[in-house]
Length: 152
Image (cartoon, rainbow, N blue to C red; front, side):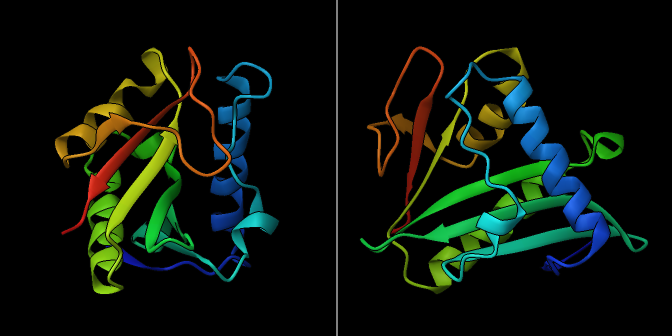
């Protein structure tokens, strides 16, 4: 598997981003999905990586730099044909390492709740993320939750 900065003009990358956004909208109550579309991921404050196996995009992950020395994990998604192969773990480790190299002090994320979110939550918690306060524009709800990882 190769992980590298993603080319947002690549059709495979675009498909996986669109798939992620559609899945998040379908699996979240109205107004509670914050998955970014392709145009939002083009923000210069956002870095996007793809994971490839034999040239096929099998995962994507994005990280947004925040103004307070923190960063946010955005748009983590594994291709549905490649689940449970450690792709998301490798992408997350890449983003954590990148955040540390930039001097980021806290890595945060917002996600949903329920069975569809449990595998991702287990991954985040396994890497040391813990539930905490809302950040940015997010608000905690019965569905939404925020997790944080201190990068000291």
